[in-house]
Length: 407
Image (cartoon, rainbow, N blue to C red; front, side, top):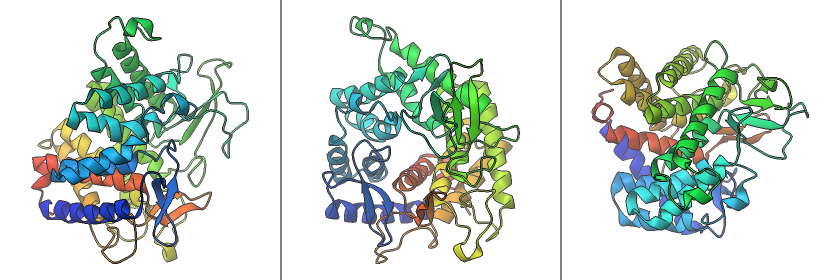
């Protein structure tokens, strides 16, 4: 695997360098690629705005080069001190964990710590004790909503709330400063919020077979469990298995177990992951392609090779390696997850999915799908696909069993 890791890191360095030479944070933050192959840009505060800075931090971790540290700090600077102003859209973990939280692990800077903890605190304000969940959005009526909801929770947020667990580990014990805050013991409160959210996601988002809905719509004015509707906004149908939604569930539950050690999350992570592997093995198209169709239940379009979603593969590969690590790669179960994770990375490192020099394509990985039902970002590169995919290669580089795996 080391050769594949080296190949992907070299490609990522080339793509990232080209982006930093063509763009500055003042221009906007990479989102999805346009038909030209160049980045469509997002404003700071959109949920994707932390991922390019996070990718630069991953390159620093993988290479040790000072250049990537300096560029990462440049690209995260424009996100500082905005946590309170962005509270209505709640994506604070996606923005600040790849950037300032990662930065703190390198710099030990009190300012980086302050920025990351401010994100955790602001995210905690979105916790609803009635439903036991962190609200995903305010003031938005997505397609499929009942217009009766008071709170929406998307499965993606199982990864977003990892910011609360990070904050709980780094905020320190109660003191005179925290006594003046809404949560007088933020470490305990934030950890409890993340665990409560994950338990509610397991109970309310997951189907009996281990697949996941995208959205659960709550109305705390109703009787418990306060649910109006479950549906799959970005998938093929409400009851379909949207691949990226399932991959968020894989990664979220794997991380919850890794961070908390609670056996219930390991059991759930295995159930969700086993369903993923079943669906992956049964999907039409190229046999053995570990990159999933954009929705496992959608009709297969041979002319578009599905289409497939490499961003879901990147997220899933990180989840599979995380799960293999926590259960032990010397176990039968761990070996199965390790094998699937490695084969997913091998697919992403191949010429079909890895951008090649001279293609005029800004992203690292090709053939991703952002939102098929809305015809937004179909068969494109996506910045969060690049971030989680590269994070998976970084994870592999840290794991001897993955690094030395022979395909």
